[in-house]
Image 1 (spheres, helix red, strand yellow):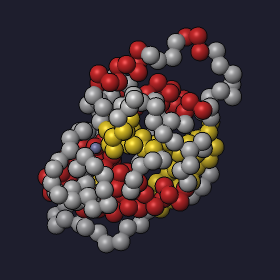
Image 2 (tube, helix red, strand yellow):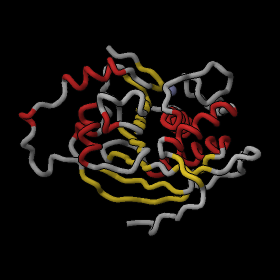
Image 3 (cartoon, protein in one colour):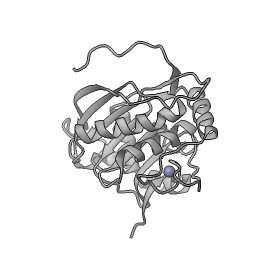
Image 4 (cartoon, helix red, strand yellow):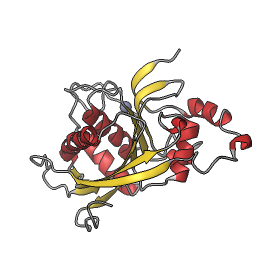
Length: 242
Ligand SMILES: [Zn+2]
């Protein structure tokens, strides 16, 4: 039986089990079609209403890469809507998402759900710029979260998964969950707070949208130090579709 939690930052102990049970060499010989395949990319602009700009803070740009699994029921429309909501929440810290690259990936059944051995294999075979958000069908982790984030502090035994977020179909309020998990990655922290209406409460809910000036300062500093946020003014990606 598994506990179903809303958001996770699993400790290394839980992760090691996945490593020990990982795929052995007997599975090395696989048919060419038995691997994840890139099916297409959609680049969409993210516009948010208003700016929640804080006096004196310079705009920082976040350019996450999104991947969704063809075997899931995630749709482009649901993902784009989540991106807009997440972007509007991050505006509180003057962090802007201008564009998102969304890749569609198909492949064998084992990649459709989040499970550390398959996830590591997927990321090795199809490496995308970080931070990367994977919209998956479900989770097969023993401690099951609707969404989880893996930063630097909890990725030592699974380095491929550093700076990735995994969101299942069952997640409530996908935009809020997406922002919450991105904040975990940007802060490189699994910490939750008890403040009312705060985005980083352990339970994702429609009314939990706020970030404090201290949380903003921390995610901006750590995000920049880890190369996940950059100063505004860079070039836009060339081409809208391919
Ligand atoms: Zn969390």
